[in-house]
Length: 295
Length: 295
Image 1 (cartoon, rainbow over the protein chains, first blue to last red):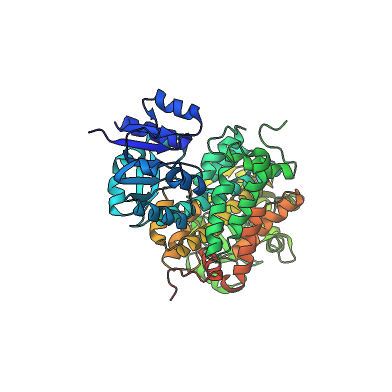
Image 2: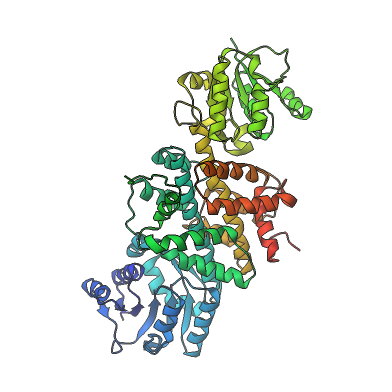
């Protein structure tokens, strides 16, 4: 029997995951407040998720933040009640570990399983079914989620038998990734201020101790002056805000992360919808440093 | 005829480079204020550099900072005057680009060539002749330095035909490397505060978007609680201080770099001689977070 999967959230990540699920032969129903996103799913062979849709075994929640996830799962119009008894929820947003534990508790009370399963890899890998997932939850949650995990992930990192560890691990990754992009912005602005050719800087850093995954990935956007958002600046005030909030609960100051967060908050005012490599423009502009694409 | 090379500075980098020069068949004379370092060179087949040593074609200056370099080259007991006419100086310390240009000017006035040639790669690669060198200078400087570059470098990045660009590129690399180590310290402290297993965190970050060269290289030191200095914390107040000083001249604020610099300055008070991965201990201690090796 074909398995039924519901998707709550059809943004660039969710839609890509839904496509991967369709390719794997799953029966996919999806909801998004934007009807154009739902239309994109139905055009690909999926169906609109409504209160009248058949109950699913799996609900994949790919929304922006904790508030959206609480509403999408357990709010007045939440989709958890449309799961079959014993069904499994995948919580794929970046949220605080305590919030993931709260969702696991709600799911348990509703007779459901919850997999704390934040995703990593970007829209392209999402569409290819090659995401990296940092997951924690019960054996039942992993088993229940297996058909969808198999369809959309290249790698599933199993981090423990209850919710929280997956989200904590995702926060560690976002701390590093967010700081590294901001460091790239400072490094490229600095290099430009010293008259260095940025394409040459990229070549050299890629084989030097200063390299990072994000530098290799994002510096070309600056060099080509192409700020089409593959991943937008607005992600970072949210994700680094989660990191510093969690750290605050642990009384752990993170001054470097906080400095990066401040940069993203400032940049989001004017550049929020641009690619996150545009943090470089924000940094360079303060000193009137010219970047590729500047007049 | 065997070429004569003088080394000013036989620290962990300089001694390794002198060994590489010896292996390449060069005749090596070395000076260091610490007689034990000179003894290590003579034990390996080199000789002590004194005012009576034969004049050299090449002088390699591998000291800690600009003040030491000015003294070692052109001070009252400087070694530049012991070069044969038309000889070449390699300036291998991390210094401001303006200072490198000043040294090039001094060398030119003395009838010598100057290669702005900061080195990267650490003590192990230094000993293996596998350094990475970010170099700029005249064609004559590159030609004059060639026997030593061939002996000690795996990669020579040619950045231009006058001094300054090499040092600017090195500063870009140090900005990134220094921020990335501090980010690692925050990420591992954060991960430990959330109860994550740090060895597992390392495995996952190494295949995730949060990865950096420094994370892969330094996180194992924290996980093994081994703070034997491969590269000490004290390097970073100096190198990031150079970066922010250069940026200050360009009126370019670098808040993330400055936050990292503050961490290193604070940590240097008690942990300066330890491996730079010990920045993690400094960060974790503020919140009482336990790391591997803590009681």
